[in-house]
Amino acid sequence: SARLRGFSLRNEMAAGTGTYQWVYLWHWPLRAMHWVAAIAIVVLAVTGLYIGRPYFAASPGPTTPFVMGWMRFLHFLAAAALVATAIVRAYWLFAGNKFERLAALFPVRPKDWVNLVKQVKFYLLIHPERAPKYLGHNPLQQFSYTGLYLVGLVAVVTGFAMYGQSNPGGLIDRAFGWVGPLLGGMPIVRFVHHVLTWVFLIFIPVHVYLAVRADVLEHGGSISSMLTGGRFVEKGHHYEDE
Image (cartoon, rainbow, N blue to C red; front, side, top):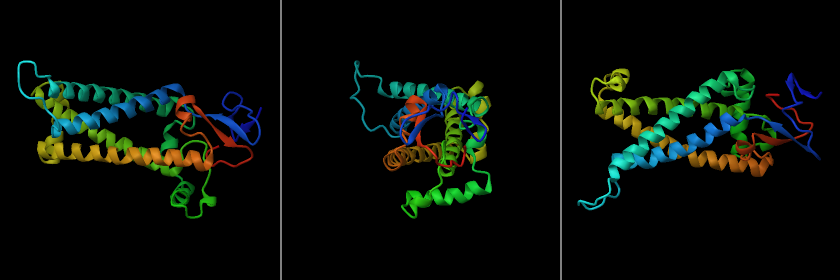
């Protein structure tokens, strides 16, 4: 059966027609995690900005909706969902296929750093014809996604540190009470948490733009791959991660 340098294509790649063939890359738990995390991050950003600075509030009265209470509830619910997706992603770093595992998220090889520069030039339309081809994540995606996971980790830790203040001496407070002293006080913890929200808000439109751009220029179906699990690639090409 056909192989891409040790990667069996019998179950992972359809024969396809014409000059393209379909490659299966992402298993359903990873795809589900991606969309749940995307929704959770949007909810966290909207509710978090409201909690920090309420941008609307009903007039006080006996029938006033419990707006802040609902915002806090949705914020905590989305945070729990995001942590759940992180657990799934961490497990899939070891249980997934070669495109989903730990090595696919860190551009550690010398050629990956060379290709990282080439990929940046591709996005800047500088020698786009020299861009390396990857079946999974290219080095720039590896670098940015790994950085975003670290940002998410700090956001979760600082968030739990603030949440623990609602029950001093409780389980959450004991587990994350060290964060405040480490950063120099809870006001700094809140500031860091707020700044990281903007990191996500900046990343989201850039991520969407680059995904759409890649689909338009490369005709690879990378967006639909997060729905179907696979994408179309040109036959006969050499791929750096095959």
